[in-house]
Image (cartoon, rainbow, N blue to C red; front, side, top):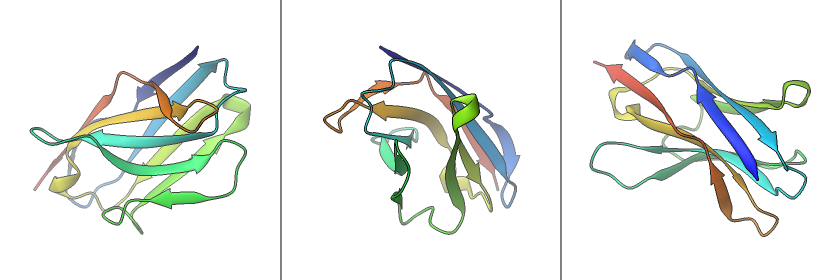
Length: 118
C-alpha cells in the first residue's frame, strides 16, 4: 500500500502563488508515475500534471502550462505542485496520486482545497 497526504491549500487572490505538498510513504517501489489532479465543484476530476517515478518525462494540462510546476524531493519522499499566477478557475480540491506498476492511478490522497478569489 501507498499512503499520500496533501497539504498547502488555502484561500488566495487571483495572481497569487501557492505550493502544494504531497508526502508519500509505503510500498512505492512498484509505482510507475505520480501526479496531481483536481476537481472543481460540479465537475469531473481532471488531470493537472504528472511525472515518471524514476524521473524524466513531465506532462501538464494545457490549462496550467507555464503557470504550474510539478517536482519531487527524493530525500523527503515528497512531491510538490508550485502554482503561480492563480486564476479563479483554478479553484478546486487538489489530489495527489501514484500509479501501480501498470500505470493506473491506484493510490490517492485525501485532497486539499484551493480557492482563488477574483
